[in-house]
Every structure is written in C-alpha cells, then in structure tokens.
Image (cartoon, rainbow, N blue to C red; front, side, top):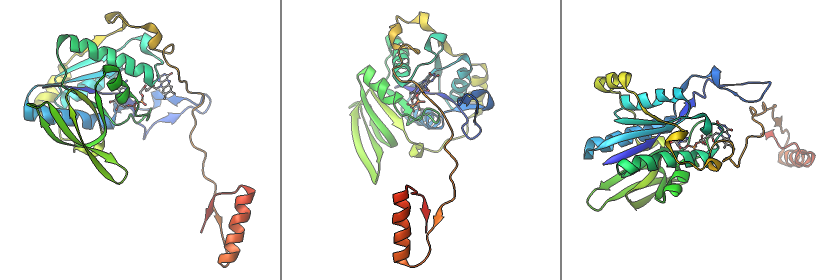
Length: 269
Ligand SMILES: Cc1cc2nc3c(=O)[nH]c(=O)nc-3n(C[C@H](O)[C@H](O)[C@H](O)COP(=O)(O)OP(=O)(O)OC[C@H]3O[C@@H](n4cnc5c(N)ncnc54)[C@H](O)[C@@H]3O)c2cc1C
C-alpha cells in the first residue's frame, strides 16, 4: 500500500501581519507551520500504513524552506518526501499549483504505483479547497472531499468507504482505488511523534525536483499559467457599533424599516 500526502507549508495565521502600505501578507512576520488539515491527512495515512503495511510519501510544492514541513511529516511517521521547488513555479495560482503537483505525482508513479492520495480539505492561507480536486481531475481519478472518517478499506476488492461531511450529517461514499481524499480535522486526533521518527527526521533529506526534472508545459505554471490574480488584499473593516432599537414593537419595526431604507442594515435588539 503506497499512500501519498500533499502537504503545504503555510504561515501561522494566528500571528500573521498585513503590510498596511502594500496590502500584502508580511510573510516574514509569521512563523511557518504545516497546514493543519494536512497534518491530519498525514496522521490518517500513517494509521493506514500501520494497519495494512506499505509506505507513506509526502509531496510539497514551495520554496526550499518547505523542506521543514516534510521533515515534520517524517517525524509523524512518513517514509519519503518530495519537494517541488523552482523559481519557475513562483506565482502559481491554484490551477497552476495542481498542474505542478500532478506533474510531480506522475513522476513518482513512473517508478512506483500510488494506491491512495490524501490532501487537506483546504489550506489555511489560500483557503480555496481547489488544489485537491484539481490534482484528482488532472490524474483522472475519483475525488472524495470533506472526508471525516475512513470507514473501511478492502485491499482485495480495492475499495475504500468513507464518510463525507455535509451540512446536516454525512454521506457514505464508496470508491475504487486509487482515489484522492481531502480530509477534515475531525478524521483523527494527532498523536505524539515516536522518538525514532524524530531522530530520522532530523537527518532526513527530501528529494528535490525543479523545472529541469520535468518535461513541463511552461504555459501551465507560474504566473503565465495562472489565469487568476489577487487584485487587493485587506483586513476586514472594523465593525462600527450597532443601532439599538427602542420602544414597542411597532416603533421598533418603523425604526428598522427606516434604517433599512437609509441603507443602515446593522442593528441590534
Ligand atoms: C486568485 C489567486 C491568485 C494567487 N496568486 C498567487 C501568486 O501570485 N503567488 C503565490 O505565491 N501564490 C498565489 N496564490 C496562492 C496559491 O495559488 C496557493 O497558495 C496555492 O495554489 C494553493 O491554494 P490554496 O492555498 O487555496 O490551497 P487549497 O486548495 O485550499 O489546499 C487544499 C490542499 O491541497 C494541498 N496543497 C495546496 N497547495 C499545496 C502545495 N503548494 N504543496 C502541496 N500540497 C498543496 C494540501 O493538501 C492542501 O490541504 C494565489 C491564490 C489565488 C486564489
């Protein structure tokens, strides 16, 4: 059983600052962490490996510093890590990111099969939740998104059954392997890393692939391959105080409708 997990290095958003002059994220102000959803994806992959045997590989696209999150995954019990890092990849939006990651995954598949792919539900910085489904469609495999539980995995029939989170409950979905799963945090609790894995992680060096390791279509990656662009980034405006409605019901309804007519829609009872 070979499981591949896509892992993104993200700024620790509880500490990130926005540059008030340029309206861009001041990435130097924030320490980086493994995307929290991806940590749960790694945990689930390691759990499956421990039950069925096999190995867990990690793939990440990012600057050389992203190797830190791969080491974190090795600490958690992953076996191998691939970092896709090149200036040509910079400026990629979600479409281009999924192209680059799919390219890396296909290169791994050239030397060994992958039975199951995991992604986080979303990254806490970009927040689009588009990359997992993007990779699945580029690889032509099924995608099971918002998964909160792996119910069963049957290697004889090559099938997996999962619970997908929906608004008022969950859906039970079955898929043939290989497929791509994006996970919710509820899927598991993170466990402490065992000491041998921590020692291995400290010495571990990922395989790093740049643009020259691929026969890439340059029009599909980096800024050129990114049809979307960020026009402006800004913190939400501070809320002003609400308007307190007073009097009996009729008076309050009148005040409310007057306010709505004036375009003042924030109110408080
Ligand atoms: C409109 C737009 C324009 C952008 N422009 C730029 C830009 O000019 N420069 C720039 O640097 N960034 C840019 N970005 C950010 C960049 O596109 C995203 O960081 C990247 O595409 C991942 O998208 P996301 O963060 O929404 O991930 P999501 O789709 O929310 O992530 C879901 C899952 O996909 C996997 N995943 C996502 N990204 C990676 C990765 N890099 N490596 C491994 N696994 C991953 C993880 O498992 C993650 O949990 C832009 C984003 C948008 C929406």
